[in-house]
Image: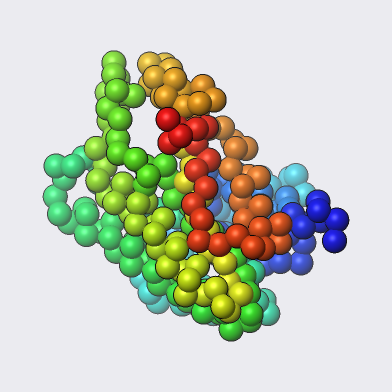
Length: 260
């Protein structure tokens, strides 16, 4: 096989959770452009259908499906629905995340809600689809983490702004996700299922204060924040046969933020 053909996802079926967000949209696009039959699942199906219509104008097809990661019944219903349409699932991208905590001082109920979706929900959906992959003899699970799972918050990035990074649940879950990736790689490895993690850096948006963008960018090796295409190549690599001997890894796609 030609090396470039190893990156193709043609003939593969993929599921990505939470595909309507900033990073989610480029991840969905990457899967579809690489040729995968792409299912996108989230609570806000209306937003996913709007995304599907936009992509259709470019000749890209995605399949929106409802999913509530806080309910096991919803997870199993999604699995059963895809099983009724596909012989196997080749790629699972765990991208959805709930961020109910606005500050370290929030009430415990917000942390518990975060745990239900970002911890229990992640476990349940990965088990449901990971077991199916293992039964069929292979697949690739890709967890979308964050560089915030690798380092603590740097309050100097936020000087001169009203922004802050005191979201303990997000740091908690993204850090745990990296080691859970290693567990999954070990558990499913002999059954041909790989599991890796991508840890993105900060994504620049139009509403970011100039001071934050400058201070954050200076903290990276490349001198900028992430954009609308920066994760696409890494995702396709991990989803494809090009990474067939890679499992249990965490790849920071953060412009070198965590390298300093």
